[in-house]
Length: 251
Image (cartoon, rainbow, N blue to C red; front, side, top):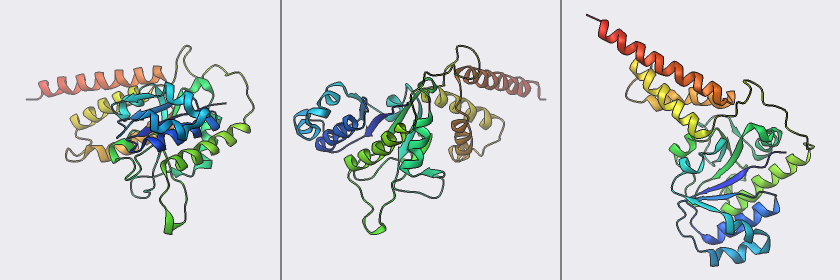
């Protein structure tokens, strides 16, 4: 069984944080992380957390950015109400929960990322997520309370986990002793690939991030291992070295 962690990005109200902590406790999630909360007042959060969620409030972490929050994770499911365009492959909560429940513990940590109440995740934050979730609602009332959204997604994750009987993790596929690449390592690789592809004029210089999106999705689907990350980083270094040498040899 694979248990995700919850990340709240710039939550505005401590009461919502308290209710989210209670939802985490109800659904067996032990880790809650806050990114730049607008107001954090434990005294206001505790009554809504009740006794079940109080322990989660005591152990929650506060970090300065989503990138920092995602450092130890291997995948992140971001929630969004905006779909279409470049936000492809958006999953309903039940489908996402089935994927998450199927991950063995050896596949690395999973984060569920929720944006602020008034405007949701920014585009740059969505890009850091490996998958996207949207909660279907009636079109005339599409806005959900943050804590409601957390509870809905966690409920689907919990019920999906009930269909996956516990079994000891098998050894991960691939090189002995390897592990899943973290999201921080994946971002390092994406930055190296971006610079390399700009060097060889594969991307137009005016909007390289747009053209990186398919590559990001490809590597996210591939569930990159650490030894594979090392290999691709080595390829990037050698190719950049080769392009510089070729530039010196040109008349």
